[in-house]
Amino acid sequence: MKKLWALLAAFGLLFALTACGGEAEQLSLATMEVQAYEHPSNGAAITLPAAWEKLSEADEATVFAAADDSISLTLARELGGFSYYSADGLAELAEELADGVLADTEVLQSEALAKPKGAVLVTVSGTTSDEQPAVCEVVVYSPLPAVRYYTVAVAGADAYQANAGLLREIYAGFHLNKTEDEIYQQLADTNA
Image (cartoon, rainbow, N blue to C red):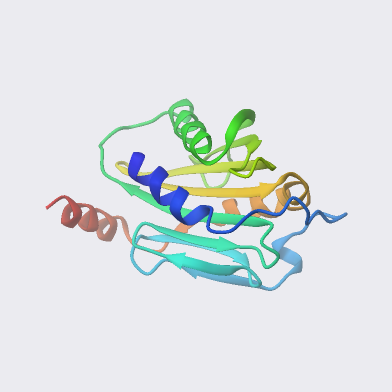
């Protein structure tokens, strides 16, 4: 988990979040051009707005940003450990991760998502490193034993309000683009 925090800190906060960016109406993937992103090796796939830019891509994580830099989204994978977590355990992992992204955090909500099945969403408010109010949402997906994926979205408070529905649509679109056998073979190769 420490490795994941370091990775998210390094990639996820490459740019300063702007406190502005709020729009009057909620945005939706259904009304915009989209891009289907498939990580080349870690098995993760997700649908994002076409205007979002990929800032970096590594074996375990990819960082995206909204065109106006009001939202960053990191899609990460964690391999290893044969721990099985309940929904409450996944929520605790998400809270720990959010605490590593923002300071002075307060959990706003924690819930199991209907789609994808088994995913847990935690929404936390706090402040960025430059003391701006922000919201961090962490979704933990646990599609296979010993494999967890995370989406970590960070936005200024206004930008979050305008994009909360859009973010939920993005989370719901997460899926695997590798077979279970391919992912477990990668796990075996990593531990060899």
